[in-house]
Length: 101
Image 1 (cartoon, rainbow, N blue to C red):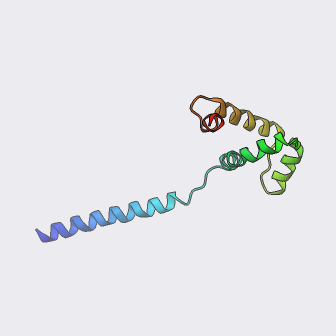
Image 2: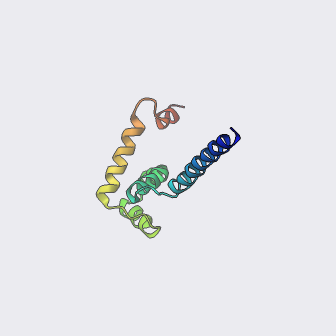
């Protein structure tokens, strides 16, 4: 009976080891470059809005972003700005809540 328990215990350990290896391998995956750009833009959005409100040109912003490694086509920049503006105006969004505070 102990032999069966040992075999079962080893099988469970092997499955757990496999799962751990699989998890470690999966965690090395990175999002697609486009998604990374979108995430980065999301983090930078408040600063970009602030600059635009201070009348810094879109071109100057795009040039600086490119110099720092984030290359965006002007039409992509406008699409991302529009998408963020839409999110900010939806009821219950954090931006609306902050604006109303």
